[in-house]
Length: 72
Image (cartoon, rainbow, N blue to C red):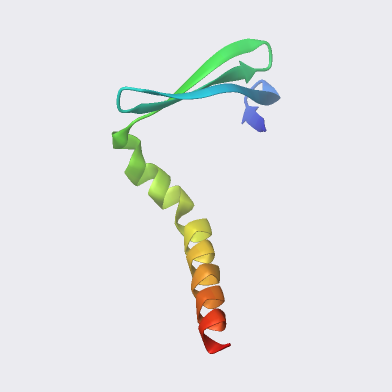
């Protein structure tokens, strides 16, 4: 995974993923720096907006596969 920033493109290597209370925590390394990403319930609307097109495509593909299976 790569992260673009003002200081350049850096690799982000995921080292651990866990739940802390109601947050999803992703720990890893961003270049030489240890990094931690916290995703909480308040972030869901933002993530839903960002993922709406890919999720819609997956849903459409799933529906098409289901319908094709019923026709057989």
